[in-house]
Length: 358
Image (cartoon, rainbow, N blue to C red):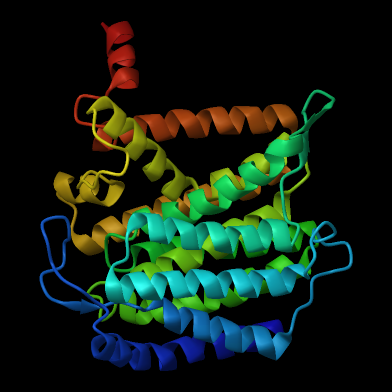
């Protein structure tokens, strides 16, 4: 039944997207070219509505319910209801921004409200982790703030990489498919089902969003995908070992790395953290000389490697996991220095290797 419903969600997304495209033009939800953007004509955004609509169609066909052993024990509303309410609030926030370009504070307020519905209403929070060499780290009063930071952080990380046709949609789809496989391995059919339905909806939209795009995700789609991915990851890996907590971080390596090194870059250049620039990963690859489509496909490849690494990490021993994470960190650092993601003069690892190579 799941596979059939995924096909329905996929087709629904293909059917709904042209409708949303016309709606975007009618409402004035369009993206105009400027110095930071790579497109040269006015483009409709609001594309996330098509993904949201097709996801809801699949959800109400299957009606997956949160299992009795689910994480909503501390909440006052069922977690599945909290997810839908939170998603609806995120969609409203994105729609308002796509039409009226609301302030950053207003967007953050919408994200905070949606995340609060999940954490306080649904009871989903990272309350403790088991340490690898014994013992337990209880977050206590910090559990709710840390969970809110995770949800809002990943939500914005997906939004930050939404700079090329099909980029955020494709990377999100890869992360969702990885989450679905991981949830299946862990026996969590609820997360597996929701992640699979959202992946199918995203892939349907990708038909119109890949270069040359006919419609953009807009903040409606980027915030929605980031929000849902952050929640699914939490549901699958809360209250477990610190090793398992690393899995969603590896899985979301592309948006997390891009966001982290954007912060590093702005600190080094003494720029405000909220400052916009053209030095994100996709900008760096374009500057090297890759085409629009090549850049997107390269980042897809990196996202797939992160997904495979997360799956491998989940099956590794403790020391094997430590070795894998170490190799991943070295590879990320080398890649960042080669493409100039943290700044053109940021090359500590390369310089270190050159120093010993003389």
